[in-house]
Image (cartoon, rainbow, N blue to C red):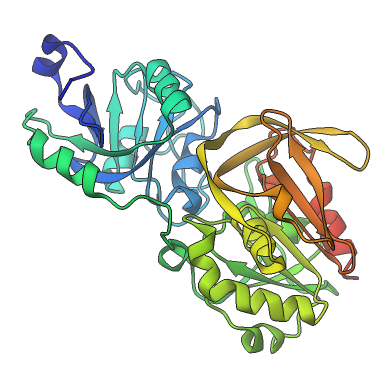
Length: 385
């Protein structure tokens, strides 16, 4: 099998990316030593690498950052979306330099090592991204050995034999326990505000692998939030007497998670429960309505995705992170498309014509616009009052 780097690069390599095709990309390992197998993808955001690495939606994936300078501002305990990283590792162009930011607590490479995640530097990430855009997101193994010893045959077999994300339910692996969410907006020097009490509409949020900032936005919009795990049933949800239900983002194939999620969502729809979904929650809502989902060739992952709102033609700059999409032509008569990607025309939003139910494929809580899409949280919560 061909190796994607010259022999002299191999001689100095302490890290490797081994694709299922057999190709090997050599580089300099950092973070934790070891190896991990998953789907290789690329992300175009220029900032927010710590939020990206801790987003549960990246479970089972290795992230290629197209922005060359990753790690420059270090890490801290506030810029995370979950209690631990969920991405398996990352591939970057330049070596991680000493952090230069007053909020830094721990350098990025040390943070990766402490959390058991692998980094690979010195890679032509543009060439790797072009390959993925042309051929799709491959299965791969990311490996780091400080001594440069790699069993390539074993790593190739591992990448080749990995089943892939299609058909894989990962929500069950990343969901959290039931909890009351009280975190609100972040303030410089003060951290996250704690919001309790008050006459707020009660939202039950189903956690399929949610980002914490989604819950913060629901609180900011005026809701009281209770979080339930991915496998929460209808009776468990309605026992909390919610005014509305939120369906979160998460990893894996929506058709696999649908086995236990869709029956519950359909009961909520039959009860005319107000529902708002994001990303995986959007896809599960589509499946519950009778639509189909499919895997995308390369997916959408970045913080600069333009989305057109069809009701008035307004364009929102959005953050996206998904490898599956709803097939628009499969939507039933009582569900309309509300948003579309201006990159490829794929579905980015749906709404029911006969129920207080809507969802979007993108991440309004990530605020790349920066506030282009916050209206979605406000629309949902205000509709519950």
